[in-house]
Image 1: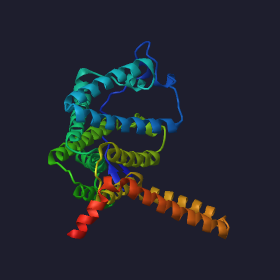
Image 2: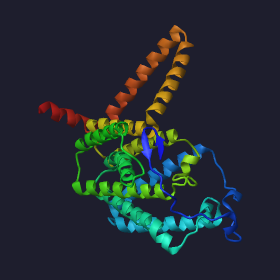
Image 3: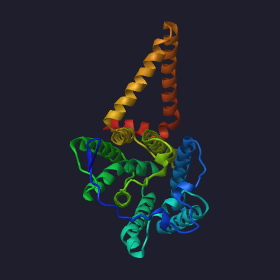
Image 4: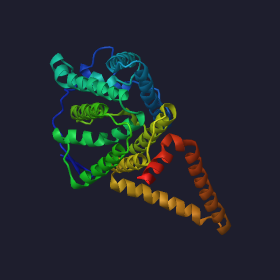
Length: 339
């Protein structure tokens, strides 16, 4: 039983039997003997953000023209299977599979449920694009940590605490605000998105239980960078997708949705990083800013402050002029004033 940031995680015996070095198939290199091509961590993070955002926007574009989400899911899984097999045979990224003694019975018991949940998750995640905007879907995805944590609790891989409950409550309140501000909400799309989050949560929980011996990592990207970078990039990706939805599809995002999504994203960052790490980061930023500010003359301080104020006012004014109509701000305040 492990303790991490106030959470209690239960560990069961490994589900996957491991092979010894002598049991590795002849002609197959051991995982440690394979050199893989290495890039700067920024490359992996940028590739993840760009490709992940691109596939979401592409799915929306496709489903707007050909409303066959299940067929799109089949195409997705077929391509993923082919790519995985190519990587397995031409690189060392998947050599960890050689240390598992896989049998048909073990495959049906441990692997197939994860595959079924993955398929259901993809179908239910594609269906909402027929009913909801990309912006609102991204806001709803902010509740993903809640579903994952509840799935872990149901499988006795974690335990609910007061601290965690408060973190999750902030995320829920933020998403509720964003949902209340949604103009074109449809219950069918909402339910499909909720189903997709539930299936994905249990898929991740089963993977964690499957790989609980610590020899594998659920997300290879974390091995290239830090959880802080991934969390902040995930928030940036969500914001960029909301902006793309406004630009390409003319999605109307109300001020209350901006507020709700901001609250949810703040809760998400705090939940992923834990309070202690957030405090350390804040203290480090404050220390650096104070040191930088203290080294400047009075005149330079005035110039910098005036420049920041002008920059902020200019950016805010430009946002109102260029996006005011798209955001529905004028109609929002006019209707609010008349009521």
